[in-house]
Amino acid sequence: MAERYRYMVALQCMTYNHASYIEETLQGFAMQETSFPVVYLVVDDASTDGEQEFLKNWAEDHLQADNGRPLWEQVSYGSLAQARLKEKSQLNFVILLLKENHHQAGRHYQKLNYIAEWLNDSKYHAICEGDDFWISPEKLALQVDFLEKHPEYVMCHTDFDLTTGNYRNHKIYQSPDDYYFPQSILGDLGIGTLTTLYRADVYDRLPQLWRVNGWPMGDHPLWIELSHEGKIKFLRQVTARYRLLPDSASHGNLEKELCFLDAIKEVREYYARYYNVSMPPDGLSRRYFIDTMRAAFRHKNPVVAKQYKNLAKEKKMTSGKMWVYYYATVISPLGGFLRKFLKR
Image 1 (cartoon, helix red, strand yellow):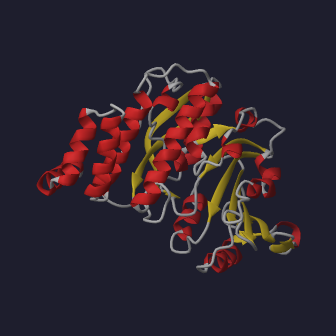
Image 2: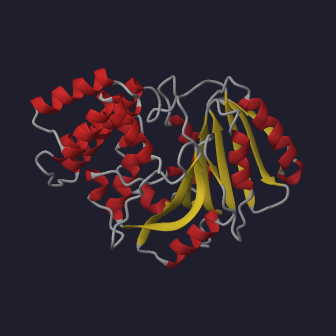
Image 3: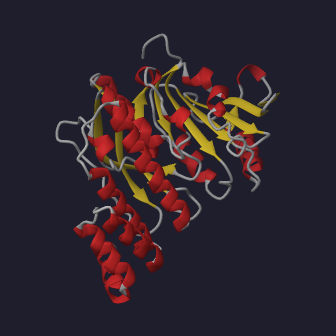
């Protein structure tokens, strides 16, 4: 590892009210077998479900501070622990328990400022939120080994499972030459955020336009900007498990899901203009109506399906796939058949 970096990997784990899940997340971090130093940056955004108490107890049981320092210290924005895992000294943890919820206060990205000193002292960055978890102890070693041997790649990611439904019921786009731009704008790459590892120096030179646009997601814009800078490698190993929660922005109630799809469409159109990418005349809109109709189908809402069907017809943006989801939503027997087919 280059001398200028203290850590080979810095992982950011943003968490809020994940008391029921955070133990599996921490276990996935602690199981990593590496020959290089790693720092896990766990930031709890003022949880109210007991997660902060769990993190305090977990730290007391599993972490050891250096040079006899107290494990916890008080900072202006909360409580901070810096320590090594007792069983593996190369695995370091920084756990920050915020006093005030920054997301609700519109200061989400300020949390990154609190952990900047560790992010800036690492060669690679990874992400895993507090409701997801890793299942392979070789996850980081596998990815670091690949990126160290292939400097032309800016990021790699792996396959993953889901915690509900069909474990394989997701699609990951694979480019034949590992160049994902401009497909990263045109379509869904299917990248599991919890499986990614990307170069910190490349990240630092990105425009990071998601910070100023107020979109409800930061990962999709990040993949677009990274793909513009170089190649991305998909490693087929299953290293992680993604938890589908009913209150998430992308998988919550139908209203939230439709708002999320509106934001995705806005992101794609924005980056197409920013990077001067020639788009199909109706490509983004046609895809949008497929996605919204699929959401209406999943939530079994024929009223919403009819609304978007009428809007798509008005804009002349219908498609065969959209009609399949529409009729499966408004005709119950057809919907039951399609659901059985999708679960296979």
